[in-house]
Structure formats: C-alpha cells, structure tokens
Amino acid sequence: MNIKSHLIAFGAATLALILSLAVVVGVIDPVQKLYFPQVFPLVNLIFLPHGVILITAWLFGAWSIPYLFFGSIISELLLRGIIDPEAAFITSIVGYVSFELLRLSGLDMYKTNKMKSTHVWRYLLLVTFVASFFNRFTHQLFIQPKALPESPLHTIFFQMVGDIAGTLALFLMAMFISKLMGLSVIKIRG
Image 1 (tube, one colour):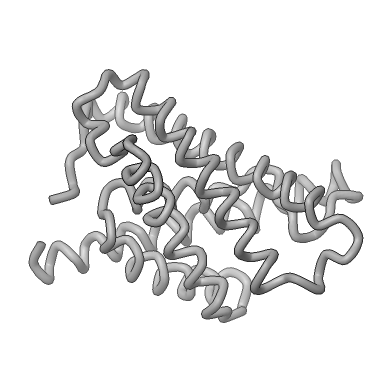
Image 2 (cartoon, rainbow, N blue to C red; image 1 turned 45 degrees about the vertical axis):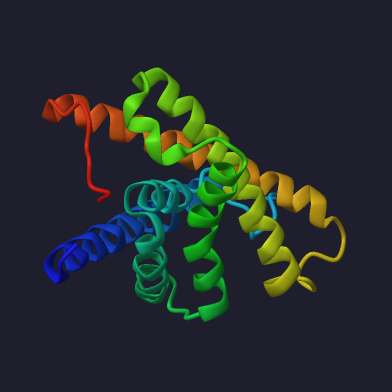
C-alpha cells in the first residue's frame, strides 16, 4: 500500500471508531442508564467499537494496529475527553492478535473472501468471541485490576456480551449498507 492508501485506511478506521463510539456515548449509554441503572458503569450492553476493531483487523491485517491505536486515542479524546495509551494499545492489538491466533491454529480468517457469505459471518463471530475475551481479560489484568474488586468475572462476562452484541449490530448494519449500495465483496487487504 502507498501512503495515500494508508491515510485513507487510517481515516476510515478513525471515522468508524468516532461514529461507533458517538452512538455508544450519545445513544446507548443514556438508554442503558435509564433502563438498566444497576449495570456496572464499565459495561456497555452494546459496544459497537469492538466490531470496528474486528473489521479493521480483518481488512488491514497488521496495519490495523497503528490505525486503531491512533484512531482510539482520537475518538476517546473527542468523545470522552480522555487519553489512555495503554487502553488504546490493547484495543489496537486485540483484533489482529485474535486473527493471528486463529490462523496459527489452522483457521485462516483472512481467506474468508473465498467462502460463502453465510460462513464468513459465522467465522467472524468466532473471532469476535476470541477478541472480546482477549480484550476484556487484558484490560482487567493490566488496566482495571482494582476497579472491579467484587466480581471481575461477572463484569468481564457482561463486557463480552456487549462486545459481541455490538459487533453483531455493526455486522448487520454493514450487510444492510452493502446491500443498499449493491456491493457483494469489499477487498481492501493487499
């Protein structure tokens, strides 16, 4: 990829992170606080950015790491007013590492463009689960070890539910938009 392609990919990943986090902060969080006030503040029942992380890692491979790292910092700064480089680093690697772990175990998710579309989404859901577990476990281990003294496994479980629900919602939106636009396959990875 040339510099222009990298800038476009970085811009697309950053814009997708900003938009997905804006929906979480502006819509999902207020609704969740209204109807589920007892839910722990670190849990989003639908966390769309996780889907952006996975789609970015799937499309761009190792290049997703710098795109997501800087995109995460920018989106968090714009929408939450915080900069957490450790969290941004974990966020930037979980998708790629999950795809690579599955590839090393014999399931090359990067070759899903040769599969039927119904199988692609099933495999992407598998990587969603792996990435969510890896993401939540590493956040709990390195970033929030004292934030969840009572029941970290309970919180990790509900964060994973939010990651998976958010990814499913994002996948459904992507399928709907691609059908509206008449797209059948998007090939960006080189």
